[in-house]
Length: 237
Image (cartoon, rainbow, N blue to C red; front, side, top):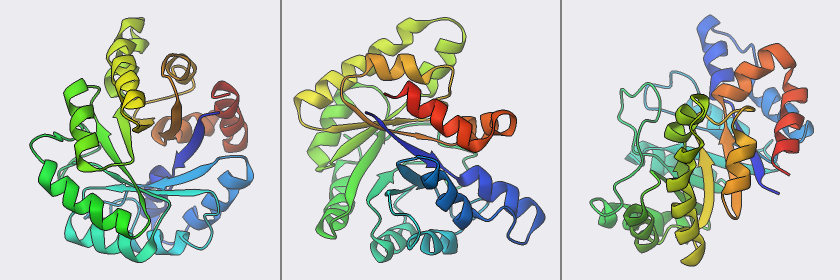
């Protein structure tokens, strides 16, 4: 079964919009695990507009499933990850002012940098994943960095699927087949939803984990968080 990791950034966004501590992201992390989620994902950004760096530390004692921290490996981020030692770190090349993640790594251009960062994390027994567009050369480049996994950036698939174009899955299948061949684990995320997740899962061989935040939280406003988590788990069987 593909694991479901819930990205709780949007919960922090709601909290920050009013100040105080409601909704409480730590309690929310406890609850989603109790409801069946197999992981918790956060993506702290330098301006801390949603998840704050302190949240990352506060969550560490309560995440007993998989703890996945995403972000651009700037010095502050690297230092935080090395102190917390989550289950997994996912490297994302987002700019400081990016509204949301909008591209995967160029693993060829940034090979030396990624290799150095990944070696540091792996020496601390932290599983590493690289956020990646579904491009065969970039998958090969990810392998050369020493990463354990790739996270396929799925926005293009999700957009095309919403328009009825299922052929958009093809580059993702090709990338996944190569990843399997060269022993890279496969994660996926960005704009995956209840509408498109089952088809994606059925087409991608050996999909280990999906990280879903915006859609899952939005769907929960109508259907309830416990119900939505179980709906995802059923589609990922």
